[in-house]
Image: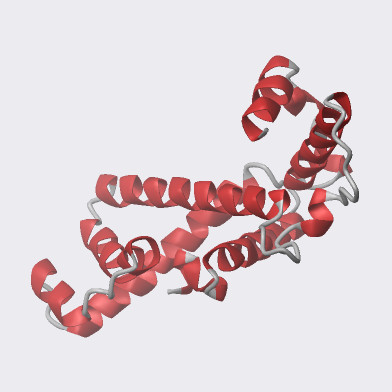
Amino acid sequence: MLQAFIADKLLEREMLRHADECRGRFRTFLLTSLNNFLTSRHRSEGIKVRSPGRLDEDAGSDHADGHVTPAAEFEAAWARALVRDVVATMRTKCLADGRGDVWAVFEGRVLAEVFEDQVPVPYEILAGKLGLRSPTQAANLLVTAKRLYARLLRIAVSEYERDEKHVEEELADLRASLGRASGRGAASDPENH
């Protein structure tokens, strides 16, 4: 259904041209559009929907039968895609700026745990691999990496949320969505490691 929505609404009908930042948040616009598309699709196929509810009201919650709502799936997919893009941008920037050390520490301490479910590489080992004088230097590089990640994430969100208040709300929503998707709270967000 999501593929049909993207093909029909986003590509064929150029739905994004109708997005107006003065009318609210972009993701809310997408969720509302997806909800309307699903409702219309169900009606046209003669499927009776007992209680469809609104996707944005159900966001992040599971149904009583243990199934994740379409809104929660959408939110989690959106958050994961955004994080992947920000991480790729961060890697490119670190390497282009000659800061492979920052990337290596972020990758070893944060990404290994968040995306590969591995134990973070100890600072002592990172310091040795990078030719640093002490594990403290590796820890300081991680602080630098987290700040860079946070800045790049804010820039990415600012591309579709122009209002600073909405940017803050979106960042909080993304953290919550990632936490729900992983079942680990905000721990699945690289910024929180």
